[in-house]
Image (tube, one colour):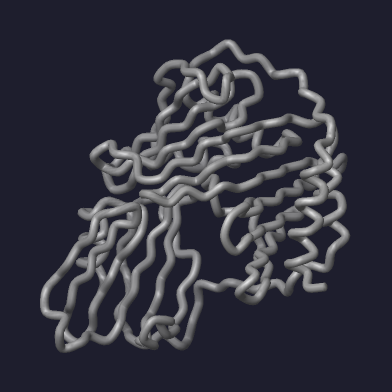
Length: 321
């Protein structure tokens, strides 16, 4: 039986077993400072055993997921995210190795300290990692999932990236709801937890998955000797770093492109440099959950797409040299 099919079967079998959950004694805190609430959330994501159901909403698309996390006695973290509709994508993290299982594509593994799929990786780090380009404020309480929650906002210091609203469980520190906001304050992506159970011990499912043989490890490198053009991005907003660059062909029409991927741990964007077609004569922008700006220059066309304001995308294009 293929590993992907076996994973689905095991997942459904253990989830249907309805194990008894033991609620952990909540850690009480008595402050409302944004940084402390953020770090309380980070500690929860790294240190708690939990099982949650959640929905991811972007535009008219709604996707349900199941999410499990556990901490072994030696401190090693285990994490699993399962897409409950559609193709059944799954991502499994054991320590610093994340394995991706796609029913319609090749399975692979990467070195990473979190699963970058629904919850931004920076949420699992201390606020010090992003304090140079975000500020965080506590803006009041709310009730989410029948729990008392603290609402915190992450605001860009330089107006060149999107912001976030996060509702943190006051007792456990777990994020209960998250919204990514564009420069006009309009939500463009949302994650809502629909059920949450805290456990005393790691989930039996995660313990079983530790025994599996993981897919091969792929090494990502920001160095490449096969880029098509000498042109490349020379500016990115403070805090963004280049995590991958490569030359490949687009799946739609086999157009050759140079691709650069940048992230700040909360959001990401891509820069594409491709040969210019005769019909492409003017710049164009598209606003949505992933903003896009494209501009022809000489014999190439430069495109930026990602979770950044259009004005930021325009500057990135202008600084390609």
